[in-house]
Amino acid sequence: MKIIVAAHKPYQMPDAAIYQPVFVGAALKTDMPDGYIGDDTGTNMSEMNPYYNELTALYWAKYNLQDEDVIGLAHYRRYLGTKTSHALKDVLTEVDIAHALTEVDVLLPKHRNYFIENQKDHYLNAHLNEPYFVMAQVIHDDYPEYEAAFKTLEKSTKIHLYNMGIMRQELFQEYTDFVFGVLEKVQTQIPYQNYEGQDARVFGFLAERLMDVWVNTHQLTYKEFPLVTTEKTNWVDKGSQFLRRKFVKGDAKKTHF
Image 1 (cartoon, rainbow, N blue to C red):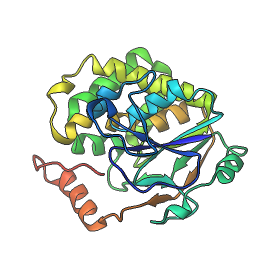
Image 2 (image 1 turned 180 degrees about the vertical axis):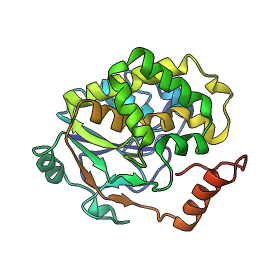
Image 3 (image 1 turned 60 degrees about the vertical axis):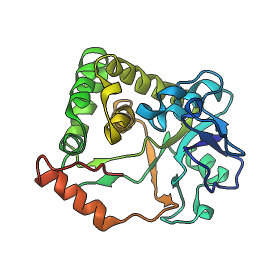
Image 4 (image 1 turned 135 degrees about the horizontal axis):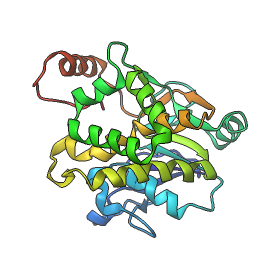
């Protein structure tokens, strides 16, 4: 079992051996933190990290951790935990994960509910619009079996975020086949190299829309877990930015992270 922890800098990590720090964008950097593995080893897409975010760690795991029975993704600031917490002692243990996977197919972070905004509107208000519409067309043309679930997600106010999940190897390979298959087709159709700031992280944001689409299309069972976040969230700022994006058109955009 390996839960890769995507990180772009040295940071505190869980002590448990199942949590493996992966230094993302390593091909573009020089100093490797102690105890980390670079996402530029083996089969990789490390140089695409500015555009794919934590997904370069996911891609690395897809091809370089195929001997593991269970694979998962966490962020250096976010983990699945036994309770909502800011303490690493509360992250899921190997026993917690193994037990949960005897009951369900996939372990996910607790869903986010935006209440007054569906997922399509939320994305379009927060990000460049063209990539989203290209992805919708790719799903329609090349992955039609997923289109019903995609349209259902568009209308929902709820979503499982962060590209985080834990599952058995077979499902992990199927999930990543879908995610990277879709994104690679989108990549050929948008000028992502011209995007700046948060907009450059386009594929990481698009992929967040694909976890629920994949899970629901295949009618997989899942269990939600609260987040352990090592840094506290400013919910006043988060909420105000959300309302500005929705109601103040043309205003400078700030992402939901």
